[in-house]
Length: 139
Image 1 (cartoon, rainbow, N blue to C red):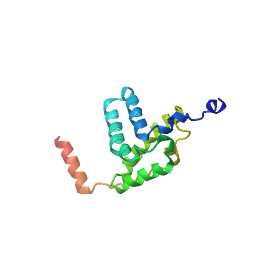
Image 2 (image 1 turned 30 degrees about the vertical axis):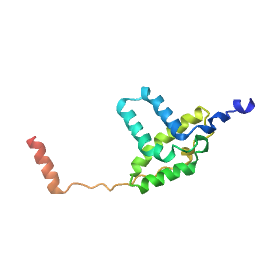
Image 3 (image 1 turned 45 degrees about the vertical axis):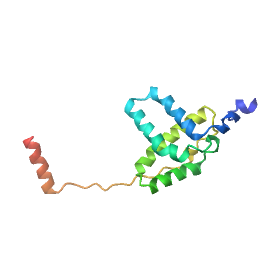
Image 4 (image 1 turned 90 degrees about the vertical axis):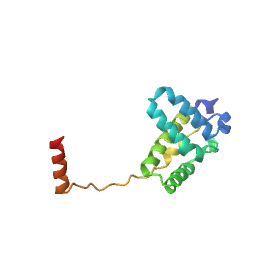
């Protein structure tokens, strides 16, 4: 009882797979977010998370799984921005799992997503600026 009151994780969650938890998390989000946002979240879960994490027991999911997820996505050609979006959704889902006492800590919180590449700002050439201004006067 003391362990339960201190926030100990339920032993019954040992068999819960990450994929099953993510599907349940997604279902619970549907009434709380707008349609396009839900479609985006659903696509992230279906395309990136389920293929790589669905068979891992939620109680065994660790930072190394999250780090490998990032590496696999980058190796497959995903942009750093996409990896960051996937990480953010996974982090949110696992935060809820912690609040629901399904896992003791959020493994995604221990992994940093890749940094976004800084793009150098380029100015218009004089000819391009004149073309834009000329187009604006006509329109």
